[in-house]
Length: 186
Image (cartoon, rainbow, N blue to C red):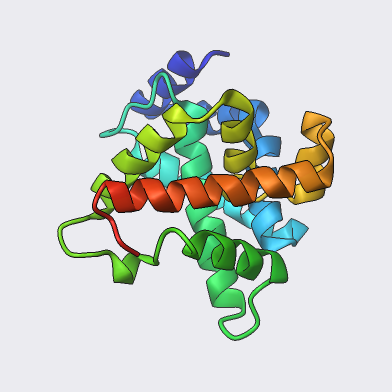
């Protein structure tokens, strides 16, 4: 079933929308959560919470043309919140590593510079990503959105791990320079 029809089911408050969503995107949503939580049970719980959040937020939202990114964002936020709750002092090594890497460029939400809100930052990031070559953008998004390991990205792209690491390093440096140019100083 295509995304528009699934969203129509949500809008009609038809409970089959959840089962249709699970059939189409369940595995991908669990994978997003698993990469953050490294727990099958917690990933399944995040997946189910995603369906509940989608049920509550459609309507008023109508993500007809971007249902998976919409659901993926919900799952990602739920998984990050769960990871923070599960181990405030002992976060997973992968989450800490990624946070450290990206904090070189972008500070946390509490540290947003004056005049730059989250919406402005998202627009700046989208413009930056739009300027990257396709393979650079793919590597960057797989690492920092989907939380893929360098090894997994190397397998997906048929690049060496050192090439993936170097691409990420150079892209982060370019992002930092781009953010400064746009007036955002972490």
